[in-house]
Amino acid sequence: MNGRLQATVGVLVAISVLLTSCAPAAAPGAPKAGPAASPKPAAEQPKSGGVLKHAGFQDEPTYDLHSTGRSLAFDQVGPAYSGLLQYDPADGRTIINDLAESYQISSDGKKVTFVLRKNIKWHDDKAFTAEDVKFNFDRWLKPPEGVAIARRAVVDGVDRVEAPNTSTVEVYLKYPRPAFIPVLASIAGVLLPPQHLKENKRMEFNVLGTGPFKLKEYKRGVSVELVKNKDYFLSGRPYLDGMITYLMPDATARFAALRSGQVRTMYVTSGNISTANMETLKKETDKFRVASFPGLVILLVHFGVKQPPFSDLRVRQAMDMVVDRKKIIDVMEGMGEITGPMPRGPWAIPDDELLKRPGYRGVTPADIEKAKAMLAEAGYPKGFQAEATIIAGYNKQTVFLQDQVKAIGIDVAIKIGDTATVERRQFAHDFAINVILQGEPVDEPDLFLSYYLTGGGRNYGGTSDKQIDDWYAEQSKIMDPAKRRELVLQIQRRVLDLAAPLVLYQHFFVSPYWKCVKGYYPEKQLTGWNNVKRQDVWLDTGCS
Image 1 (cartoon, rainbow, N blue to C red):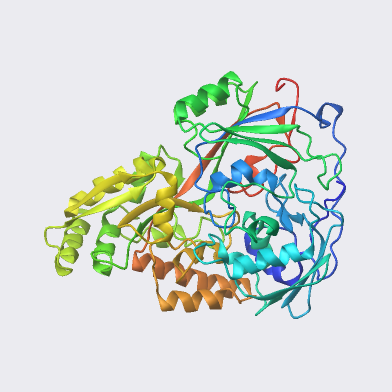
Image 2: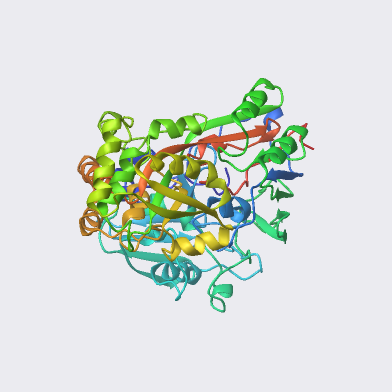
């Protein structure tokens, strides 16, 4: 397609690709054009026009896409933004150009030069330049005081960034890093407007990008309305005149709206519809598609490890021992699979190894007695009380945790807070227990393992372990995939031994949508939100 060139992945990405299946490897050098698209049947030729109506979930605490760790924010306003690179929305694995026209990796793997497209404008008509890219890297590297960068792994290994002219960006790495290009191409790499952030620490609810859609109106608690960016740099895109995301926290209301045609798509998660409703839609094959797939998302139980009782390893390990991973998947109606700190796939701990661990192989009376003895050794022979701070979406999982640890005398009180408050407390490590799904757009150790890194952007419990830090730094530099995998496995084993946080399961996604929505491939995005720009989405007959 015009303007969509297959990215050259070069020596850095070639190694990562072997394991993450992001894109075919290519020799270093200028990008090559991707294969020409096969001609589409007349009935499948994209049609311009129409407004996509989408069921979202709830209000987000911020639309600053650097500081939020929540995929909901990307789902709602991601179509307004671009990055240097992106994952192809048609397959979710191939890295293609976005704001970058091309890029080149030096022979030593320590310098990446991006050449930008010409004549790109921000939505306020300001010209987009290389200095804007440098500003974003600098913000990732050294955020303003009080601003947390959720996916800071985007700049791991970056030494400095230079903009020698208006259309060239030079990124200098401290070492060759196999994850740099895959992570930069993910949603973590979206670029925010310097013209706003030079005057303000955060974006808050301002939306100003270079993407295919522009913000028309945000009605808190009601909807987010985007309209077509007529100056978008890809000719003929987007096909839609706009899209409206309705904020609908009630699952029953979302299902009714989808089935009646009031909305045509839904935010991708397992909580959108019940298993029964999912089966209902599957029977209506003339109208609906229902994509169901394991997302790159893991349920974690974080502990405030800086204060007793969770500063004591024995307490955490006792809880880990009595939480039955098989049973929680049953509670979630089968919408999950067991895993370790990395999702199931090439980096994951093998099942046969996991199933030897208490809590994974099932919980026996002997496990419960041993856990009680460990609590007694830690000074809690009668157990203790603790509070779990969560948002409403995690009530079912937290009730399960509450029930499981009662067996060893731990009484968990559940406190449900609003999203903004809970997220602030997460970043401040201000809680005893927090239950949350954490995920990434690509299956990359530098992203998932940063949850356990000292100072990691989404290390909500404040875990700090020198061995993990050292191994993490080492694996990030290893170009040999087999050697890197061995160290990645070692990190995961130590995370499980430290039981901070607890890893409960890998989450399944469900995405029902009307068949008349074309160019929409949620099941191919691995997380469902790796590429949310919707520039290729169009509405066929039946979706008017």
